[in-house]
Length: 85
Image (cartoon, rainbow, N blue to C red):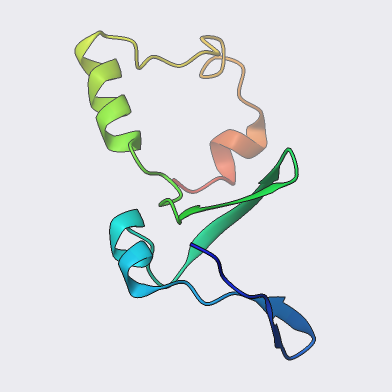
C-alpha cells in the first residue's frame, strides 16, 4: 500500500487506512522508533506491563528477596526516624 506524506502544521504525517489500524492493533497512542532508516510504529505498551506476572513467578520460586541483605541492619538514622513507609 502506498501513502502520501502530508503537511500537518510544522510537521508532516501520513494517513493510516482503517484496515491497517485494525490489523495492527494500533489505537490513539503509539510508540515510534527508527531502525535502519525505517520508521517502526507499534502499539503503546503499558509502563509496567507484565510486571505482575513476573513478580508472581518470582514469589513462586522464592526469588523475591532483597538484593542488599545488609540494608535492614545498616540503615541510617534518617531511614529509621524520618522515612515514612
